[in-house]
Length: 348
Image (tube, rainbow, N blue to C red; front, side, top):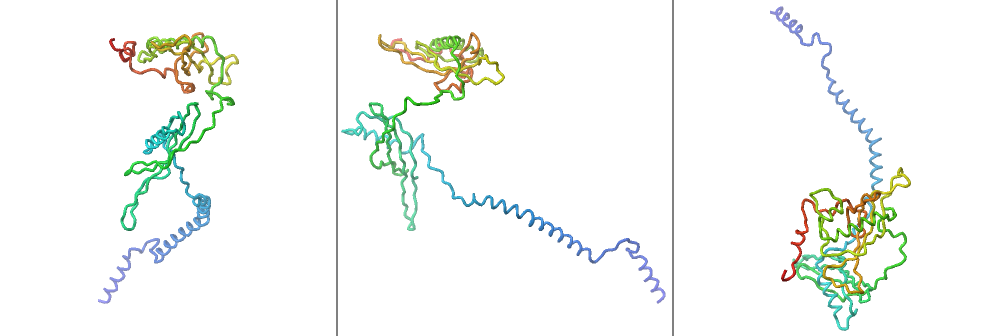
């Protein structure tokens, strides 16, 4: 029995799974892995401390003055379109002007120029639960004009709330304005980005042709004068008006490129065109001169013998004019269309 037990023990030793292994598990492997992770973390900490931390500190220091700056509260803007106190302010000024004796005889309101918001209306609740109302305040600004043409500023303070409406505080004020300087205006230019150019005869001819077509009442005649070849566009002329004494003021163009020839002329120019207007049935009398209207016009083909006015607008719009911008797109407008739109006199 003892001999057999010995043989069995030797067989188990021969069958050991790691008998031929090149490397066997070690008890300290887990400890070495943990040590490697600690080394990596230590390296990250060193890099962070030596490199990243100073950079972060510099960034914080650079932004610190901005953090310490006091918060800038934007100034209260004047409401130039409307105000809940506008009507009360204007009525107050009108009643003030109508007093006898008047604070400014013959004076009238020329414009309402907006209101400065001094306080917003709000309600608060105190410790006892009572609601307290705080009114809003607005300072209205108006322009007055005297019979002689002098301008004055008046201001009216008005309290208001959504519950009670508006209440004027005090009487209007009267502050004279300095008269405008009508003489000394150096470097005054209607078109700052344009260069003055000469008035050529063909340009004057184009202005006369356009003024005649523009006051003809005939949309087709105006389209032909403009030279628009697009049949899907129409132009609306003045109706029942005659143009007289057409004149050209300033003429200017965009600067030519440096490579342009010395005698080169601009192909497009802007001109200031004015003419007198006489309406149908208007009794001018022998001594009266027709009032004038003024336009900025865009003249195309200005360097040829047949220039054309291709756009127009109010005085001062010259730099924004684009060819054919006055056209009505997608509609055919005729003289009959315009006649139908005009009011008919009684019995006609």
